[in-house]
Length: 102
Image (cartoon, rainbow, N blue to C red; front, side, top):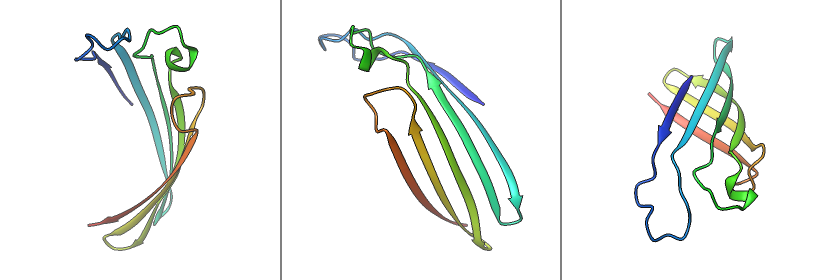
């Protein structure tokens, strides 16, 4: 569980009204097998914008699902998928592949 509040720094002369905003993440993982973990995350927060445009003003939220698969001692691969739930200004979904060496 993680959360934070941010204040945009360079907000003058941009033509957009910015405001302080909050973000939070909740994550869970389950060691399903000795070499395989299942992962889930929820990201949510408030919008940094006050523009009158729904696409920018809606609070962002995403869900993520993934696995960590230990290939051998010291080597692991991560496969994940993130879906944008409601905001129209971020990618709708993304796939990630990561390779870790110890």
